[in-house]
Amino acid sequence: MSEPKVTDPILEEIYRFRDEHAKKFNYDIDAIAEDIRQRTKNSGRTFVTLDGSDKKSAQHANSDSPKTTSN
Image (cartoon, rainbow, N blue to C red; front, side):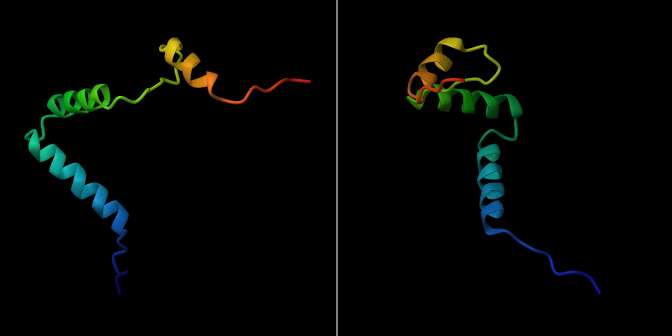
């Protein structure tokens, strides 16, 4: 006897959104990536990288965090 397929409605929504978005660009990964870059750029939000390549943004983001001291 086979196990019933377990579905997760949140994952199904994510998969559906990803497919609809990809379909808009005919599943062209370069076009999809460019759209995401433009959405990120136009969002007005501050993004930081964790690899240290964007030190100015990282310093800005860290300026809002509470200061800690080492003993």
